[in-house]
Image 1 (cartoon, rainbow, N blue to C red):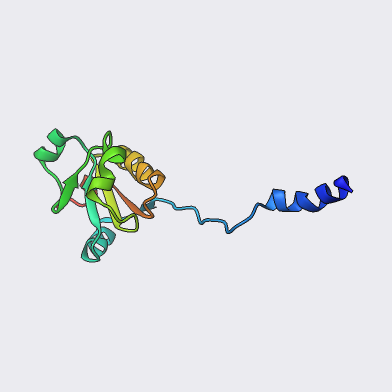
Image 2: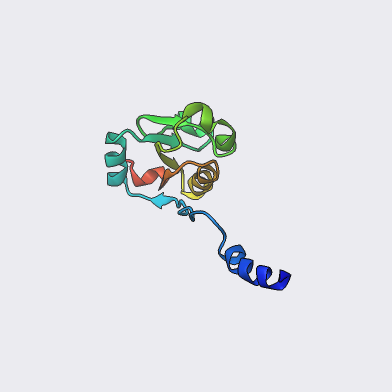
Length: 120
């Protein structure tokens, strides 16, 4: 009898229970897509150092370095459904920051890559 119960339960253990959550992925965007998202209320974050940010940055950007973004983002952006765009100098740090935001539960994360993509 115990074997029969076990055989009955195995399919449920393999399949799990509850709904599967859709995996959230970072979306790479262009400068024109950034403009559309900004018009829709997205938050633009420069993830370079404060020194780099002070040397020049994109209009309307907040500065939260890649080293601190996971620890400080919830103080700056409370709603995890907020559209967030990250960028850096070349695209390496923005990719790291975008993944950190996804890991913190943010669901609308966009990676602009390097800031040169939008400089005029």
